[in-house]
Length: 169
Image 1 (cartoon, rainbow, N blue to C red):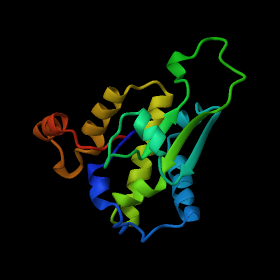
Image 2 (image 1 turned 90 degrees about the vertical axis):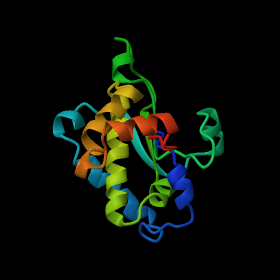
Image 3 (image 1 turned 180 degrees about the vertical axis):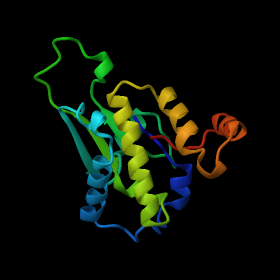
């Protein structure tokens, strides 16, 4: 799951500065472009998986995942990770990755921010498909994405862990 919930998104709710409410068609186009940027060696291994765009996660889903307002999800992987599949796994409905448009727009100020959030959310959820845990994905994100431009250091990560940043992927 990339429940990357949002105290931040909650504060931003209604702001929608991102693209002043992007059309679904444009958002789907950005998701498709993000999929195309996944390295071929990983894309080739994506089998029987549907990537869908939805408005927002349902209240029932947030409740089931114990995400309280103002928290929300930016994306969610649902399925059986490759590392947990048995030899006889098959003849099943596709695994599913949902990308939630409204929460992504809520935390984005520009279309470039939307593109970044889509890309990071998609990679996070695909990581779950390949069997990476939430902890492993957070470590990767801290090391590679959140360290851009000196934005993150060990003290920041400790603060986030103590306070909870209210965002999940």
